[in-house]
Amino acid sequence: MYWVIARIEREPALPSGLTGLEARFAGKRINGMTTHRRENFGEQIEAIASAVRRLAALDHVAVIFSVHLSPNVRAVMNDQLAGQENVALIEPLDYPHFVRLLHICTPMLRDSGEVQEETPALGKPVLVMR
Image 1 (tube, rainbow, N blue to C red):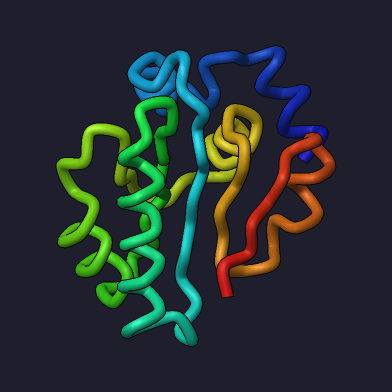
Image 2: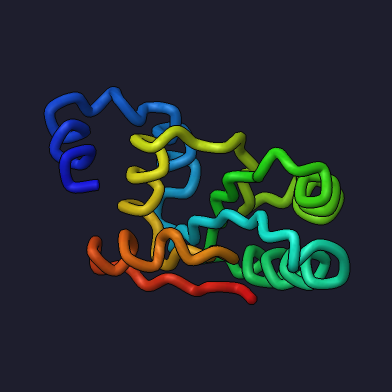
């Protein structure tokens, strides 16, 4: 992760796919988000989407949601969150873009533990949704 951060510092255009979202949500607290665990499909994913919708209703908050390819995730998130002013549903990110998202968000919302080490290493809180 630190190697990618150093590379981004040398090549700022590397994660440029998030530049428009950073500008769109300037001045807001950005929450990064991903979710994909099968254990959350069904009622749990519906509850997560509902909570995100309530969170994004706050004027000072934005959510950049890297939506997993699973139709069980996409269908619910598109149904409940598409068109919300403070929510950006985006395609899954490559690692440089993911690291950039970790850098600009506070906190990172995730239903899996992979980022539990990376996020705090950047001084960012992570909320694991299970």
